[in-house]
Image (cartoon, rainbow, N blue to C red; front, side):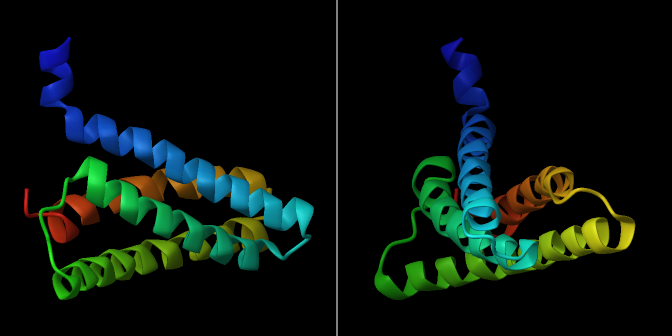
Length: 134
């Protein structure tokens, strides 16, 4: 069992922390929409920021075990991470807008749909572009 875990450690860790990142995203989103009565697009943006901050720390430290050291190299890594997440965040916002305003799907259902696409895209970005030092 340990050998199997070690073989797939990165993917398992990414899925684990991806689920936690999604939880952060959902908790903040629903706190904003249900608790603070903020528009769903603004709530999506706020929840995105919280999730990106959480994801950078967990991906850097535990998933991809970044070897980058020093202020400027870490700042560059973080900038690339945020840049990639901006792309997937725009995609998230676009899918939310199309699903809710144009198609008429419930924002809750649309939120779950967008997260599947975002998680897959973010893994590809992290593996190929951001944390490729491993």
